[in-house]
Length: 480
Image (cartoon, rainbow, N blue to C red; front, side):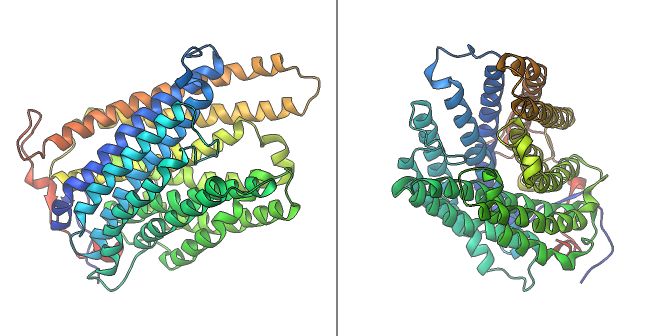
């Protein structure tokens, strides 16, 4: 079933890519616009932690609303659009047939982004729900479910109508994400918004949704792209691939059970936190196997592989850090501090976002039949992204560690605590500025590259280099 490795630097363009070009480009471009917006809002909230008077006179951008807007724009704007595009592209390519129901994808994308925009408007005017990862007003959430279903139907059809009998890890993760999000999203709406639970159960349900959104939706979308692109670029089958199914089921079965780690020491039954601690320890098997399968990405060449390898390293490191901080003696210091924010940034900005960006760098030339508009922009984005994530996670982790020790010391006043945190918060704000600049460069480069494929022409168009593109080899289907 395999042949000798082919030139992985050249790009294959198939009928699957050309038929789905514009719906997928619409999803990717929608995602990148939200990424830039979330980066700007992240910078605003970082500055407000240092200077509370910043935008204090603008009710729409006070810290609480700006933070909710940033989280929503990142998760439901950037991550959702990019993840859905990655899932559809992977399922179509591995299914061996052009995607169907693409008109539904376009309609669903338009209404999904309208719903997110209306939700952000509601948050800005004071309608946020104050539930982590579910800040959107409840009025727009049914529309989001319908729009998500319209987009996801193309992925389901690609799975059921696949022409290749065997399936691969990339397909498992993509399909799981498409099917599980409507379940956790609708269940959270019922339990937290439409018929809200009371008391302790509400905190448990909110924690379950936030953790489930990560382990059952966002992380599988990122892994679907990584499991597909890494063997494509390296030209080699994944090592220890027999363990991949076990890692997949470990994530799906144990992932949501780790939610109780956020409730350690809280007014909830002790068994909830204990189950979460055990689940975090057991889930290390998943992270170990992912690192084992995809270790070929480390040290690889090419921009796409560098982004993905960094994202995978951050994803695995974040999993091990979650397990460590779940233990009660460690949580006593890190819980309810900026260390939680560092862990979230490591997972979302360092893991998920970097993997998505790497997949986009790989996919866009195949969708457009053109190389990236500016190689200098690509290198600049890579440098800014790597430096920004490392500085952001490191500064927030140090700030959280100091904050945790100070909060456990009754002799430290609030003024002293704020003074101890200020240098690290300044570094975090600088990191957000670097990331925002990288997002802007990425958006400009994407727009100019996509414009080259426009049927009516573009002033930025360059002649296509036929040597960059080829038909897929037989190695790449089984290796994916």
